[in-house]
Image (cartoon, rainbow, N blue to C red; front, side):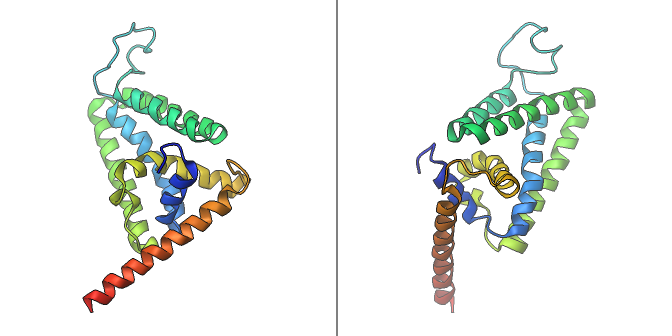
Length: 198
């Protein structure tokens, strides 16, 4: 899979998220996971020692959370300029918002809120897969790809559903065909395993 092949990334992730209820669950929980992950990373030691004026009295820290924000934002921009720009804005909004919240809550409470939110959001997603999708999450097959694509996937789902957005003409039709093919292949493999057990 090419690193910047949006169609393949989206089809891979879409094959694990074809149930409408599971998709809604992910739309609700994925970006809060990004936000609270950055909340948890706020207390990490800054990587760059810049003047206080550039870090707003230590609130916006150029630490590992900032580096991850930049990596995600650049990756999304490389995948698709228009929706990638929206995703990049959302990434930086999460970084700024989580930094401000962490500063307001203090390290101990920010950690507790971050952990509780992560547990809630991940539980919701796993229930979505177990109860509605009836398929293990994508992260069990490709951890890095699932973590990188999840926020962008749900954003594209919303942009496509609400605004009819496509990165290029025919994108959704091509992705849907790949998703259906992958799901058929997965079901066939599942049936073969089931037949071997009986």
